[in-house]
Amino acid sequence: MNGATTDDVVPAAILLADGTLFEGEAIGVYPADGIARGEFVFNTVLSGYQEVISDPSYAGQVITFTYPHIGNYGVNALDEESRHPHCSGVVVRNLARRASNHRSSGNLGTWLADHGIPGVAGIDTRRLTRHIRDHGAVPGVFGTAPVEELRAALGSARPTDGIDLVAGVTDPEGRTVPATGGATRRIVALDLGIKSTMVRELARLGTVEVVPAGTTASEVLAREPDGVFVSNGPGDPAAVQGVASELGALLGEVPVFGICMGHQMLAAALGARTYKLPFGHHGGNHPVQDLGTGKVEITSQNHNYCVDPETLTGAEVTHVNLNDGTLEGFRCTEVPAFAVQYHPEAGPGPHDSRYLFERFADLMDERGRR
Image (spheres, rainbow, N blue to C red):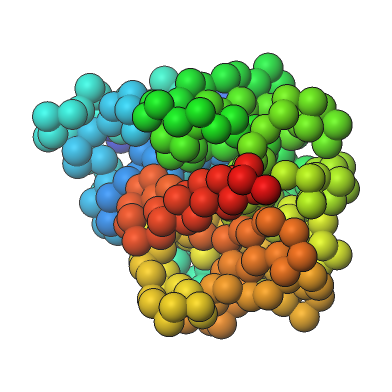
């Protein structure tokens, strides 16, 4: 049932693992039994809903949008961050039934249905957001089935802890994207759930070869890259198998730049541990300070896990989150490598941090001149 393109209203409900109930109406499409599952988080962006929903980093999660009016400018192919969404569902207060924008090629409700994504509209998202803030990201079930059936299915709702979600979103085939600005650098991008905007930004720096998450260090070096990029990705970094050890073998051999999950994987290669934040950082308005310049950047973020700076060795902290003081970036002190937890590619915005791609280019060029 697609609640965005018909006047028929199909009741739907959300039931969290702690028993909290929310009632609304169905959007998108549901499995045959009318029950979907996932870990509920909230995102604070005012626009960019299509980029958020299609970000592979949301695999296993149900995205609650705090902004009350979602879908007003429609959808289009250029704003998709992956071949298809990997999130478990979407929750909104009000889903616009008509789209108004010159770039729009369709409405969000139909787009959700076309991609098989279930959702609930008409929810008091302020109440749900406050609940997540108070109790943390919480698993739950939602759907068109009776509440008694939802309650019986609660036992199958799981958090993202301890699950390797990267294996389900990485492209096993890989692909090569030519440089768009005439640059001759060669970049290998390790796909842990890479966003299309990241690939476009890297293509400004050189030819990008996107490879699966399981690619070994020797296979990467055989491609003779000028630099290695480690992408974003979903879930618990401690559950991802093999990536950190292969990155460890690359350090010192080639410049490395990591974003989000790539930041966590690079930290793990240095021996650092990660921990789960209560409700994560999901939104486009997080203030981050560059400790080297003192400049404060407004950043786009999407992560539930964070690196423990006390366990980080061979590196210095370069960026911190001004909301909670958590680690947002570091630079290796002995090898050419750095990483940030937030999203400088900014799909959606803001664009304060895109200079980091130029910093990666400078690191590759400096390495090449030696």
